[in-house]
Image (tube, helix red, strand yellow):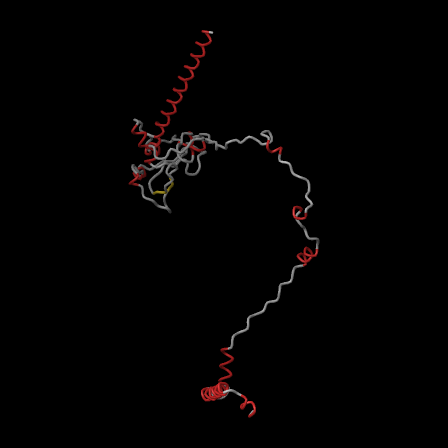
Length: 260
């Protein structure tokens, strides 16, 4: 030990002295086995080493089989595929526009229908400001699809189901020019969907037409009291214009044939 100390440099001698002083200080600070217990607590934990999962028998059998390679990468290409048949117009079927068809229900009046209490008619809304929204106890209007507490109409057709026959007062008046109170009192009243005249955003596309949106203001500006009468007037004007055009074309064709 003396030989080793004699061969050390002054720096190494100072280092050994500091280590010896630190050990003595720790012995005084942690007498007995307290120092070993502290080292055991602060020692870093070993990470768990998981073994590699074994392959299942099916996977092992697949790995032992022949390796599949792409024909393009291996250089041995198979039979060429020709797409010349698909280029002809006869090979492809013509595209047909899909239009939903409306299926009006057969009308059969229910003679034993529900009779309204005159006191219930006071619950019919006359304007949209009187409608109170209620997600739990409200009823849905077929036209505006708003769930409110006001009284809705009831279709007397036996085949009418769901909310097809439920219309609130403002929608029935603005869209079809009908009174909801009279519809509730009429035991033979049939809803617009069953009459195939419904102009809501669901029923119009089924007849191949686009939804109109809020059209009551345009209808009144043109002198109509409801959207239904406005649309009916436009259709009658279009039909009259087409008939006049057809008559004019027929007359012109007859004159040309007479001159020849």
